[in-house]
Length: 103
DNA sequence: AGTAAGGCGGGCA
DNA sequence: GTGCCCGCCTTAC
Image (cartoon, rainbow, N blue to C red; front, side):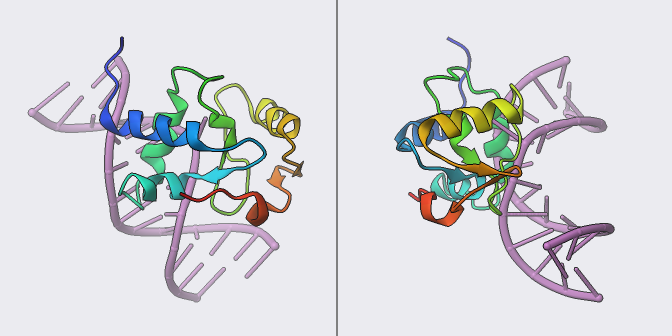
């Protein structure tokens, strides 16, 4: 078991709460952990995501609706989202606000 | 122990 | 809508 920091663990848990077909933002996650300005830290935690399939890190997008980045490639991220019913256009989530899941 | 980098956010011109 | 700045938090080497 690697040294999972509280922060990381918190993010991972929150990610698992995200229902399929929905997306959240780094800012929301940061806010959920009590650090609304820790969006970067969130991205970092998610990036090191130990259980990629178990933790829907691909369901995390930027605050402006952009896909953001992905350790395996944004294309892969979009692919996964599309499979879950999330439509992505030109690197941005369609109806982002509508499928945005907030804690 | 200190430094660098990171899958960002928000505000302003 | 675009571009630029700074700020914020954490992890890893």
